[in-house]
Length: 97
Image (cartoon, rainbow, N blue to C red; front, side, top):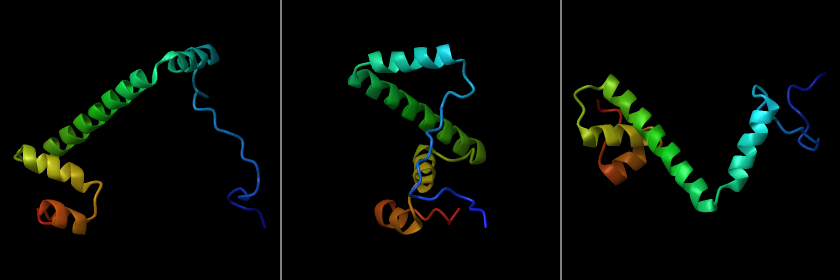
């Protein structure tokens, strides 16, 4: 009977994250990351996180055009926390509206 997934004891080949990218471009990107200081990498991560938050909040505002800043914040956080935690920490029931 064939297995649908690899045996956990077997060696799995790493996936190439740049398999759709020219190898020279992938090498240039890897070299750029290696050349960055830890602080520069952290700054890039912060910028990426801020962009993700902005997109998430834009989607919430598109679905809930009358939501104020606090409601947008709560709806975004509710995407990551369970209902009990939302109620305990923020006093907000994500299922109420």
